Image (tube, rainbow, N blue to C red; front, side):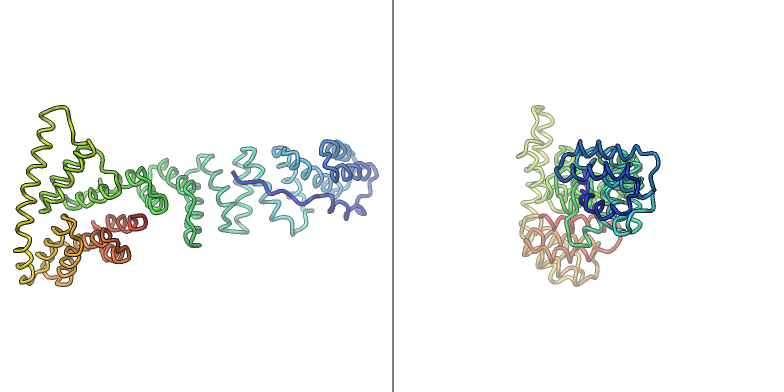
Length: 400
């Protein structure tokens, strides 16, 4: 909740303006109020101010000066609900000095927010932002007010601007700001908006729950088995591969993709964490057979790597080098994986899917700890079915 901006003591301003207060019935209690304010006797001061306020015949300036005193005293007493209309009345009077209008406008917005009058808070925050666009504290106040008023479109736009401005300034946006943007898009049923907000969440606050929600959105898009496997790899990397069905499907897709070593590691991990452990013998038997099959294929695959490397060097096509690099990557041999993938990409000719190859190269660089090179590889992925996954892997480099 924004803090109310406390005003400078009104007594000084009142003292300078005494010559303009001509009504004795107003001047006397205001003088007494001023003396009480200097002693911080707020109740006494308020009683005297109300005496001046009760005078029937007073000039517009005298009425304004009474409000000046009253607003300050009410702030000191933390009577924000009573202070807000006083300052609003002063702003609407046309008598407020020009150099005070901006700060008082902000104060009124803050006061109404404190008293949970979010309509009024929004109105006055907008007045401030019309003159001072992109002011962070007022943007936050407006966005929170809009959210609490169920103006989700407005809240998403306002808080989105706050988040973007913080990023442009090289600062980390507050988690709560992004949450308001995300929840607003959720209530608007805007999946694209939710996805973009979640991307910012995992960039700055890479919690497992945010990654899980983000990947749940993107991995449901159609793109084929190899792309699905790509999302499973990222899920595994960020620690959100949890369901037994996901472990099994990832292993099977890895087998189909010709990387049985990855399938073996996936099933073994599922067993180690207890996900692929079952008291049901039939179910456990399926997991055991899956592991045994993956291990058998992996053993054969490892034995053939030397021969594949020789054939890949001789081939005019880049695809054998890509396949070799992906195999090396599945066994954790990142140096050989990087070398083979770079050769295959450089050849270009005959490469089945250059975008998938660049993602594999980026993953290899990332696993080796070379984040800048990983980002360059992910950036090389063209706009298409692999581009979302490449963006997510690029974000992953920020926290890996």
